[in-house]
Amino acid sequence: MSKGVKQVENSEILIVDDMPDYIAFASSILKDEGYKVYAASSGKAALKFLEGHRPDLIVLDIKMSGMDGLEVCKAIKSNRQTQDIPVIFLTSEANADVISQGFEIGCCDYVVKPFVKKEYLARIRTHLQISRQSRELAAAYKELDMFCSAVSHDLKSPLNVISMLVSSLEDELCNDNKEEAFAIAGMIKNKSVQLTIMIERLLEFSHMCNIQPNIRELDLNKIFYDVFKELHDIEPERNIEMISGIIPPVSGDEVLIRLAVKNILSNAFKFTRKRKNAVIAVNFYEKEDYLAVLVKDNGAGFDMRYHEKLFKVFQRLHDAEDFEGSGIGLALVDRIMKRHGGKVSISGEVDKGAEICLYFKKYKNNI
Image (spheres, rainbow, N blue to C red):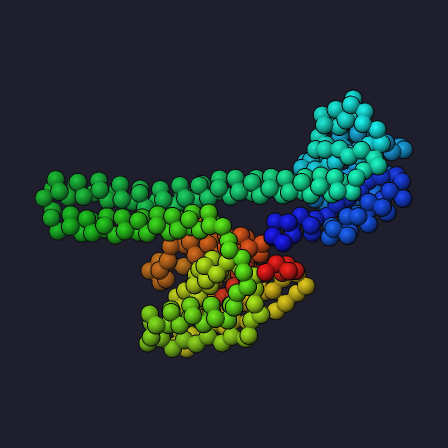
């Protein structure tokens, strides 16, 4: 079963109906399909529930004593916190006027009682998928907007420096000061190289974002060992060791996860460069829903007040003179983990090292 379907089947659904028998019947059907079901026996109870919960979908009976379904739906859609939750109406009679009213105030579909089980489940699954895709699209647009803003800001800086250096170069050439002109030309060249590297890293980041993950079972132990050896071979004189427990298999795309591990270990190699004896410790712990893989080093560390900046493109907490880098690595790791339904976090302390934690979501039978 695909990851997308799993996400739909693990969804939370609120049933709103003043008939206990119907709630029990519908709940049984939905729970058998893997949904988490909540129930409210009145419109007021439903709105009270929504003050502290955000289900993925609401199945709402139109005819209820007291506050009817139309009133409840109107209240849901007028609240910014709940307006995006899809609402499916249940009606005992296909009254065109009532159904039309329902669509006008924001319901996405309706089912006529008594319903056919297959149709009922198909409509619920369809609207859960549409809702999930809409949320993902909205998040993608928001991320793209933030990304473009960050890129324009960070690319503008070296371009401004190059522009000022060109003006200085023109002045020195006019004054026939060749020695100073050559020095400025070298600075322009260096800035141009930096700008080229930044653009190349952005292209890599953009390309990775478009890759469709090929999910399969992965041996993280081998991936960490191979990447560590590859990096150590580049700096064979370093006294650096990796201590690792035996990590259970995870689900993921080998190319993307290897890229994430390479960025994490590259950072560990870089920020432990001033340590006589550098150590990278790889460990894990398991919870019911996820496997957490921890990578800790004894390097330069960082100030936790600024840790959120590390997952944004071109954001650095160390001077380039001390530690080289483009500021793309952790943003890339963050995106890779999100593409796998997981996440990444980081903690550290100045001069006492850093620890990155990768959270791999568990899916039953997802291999």
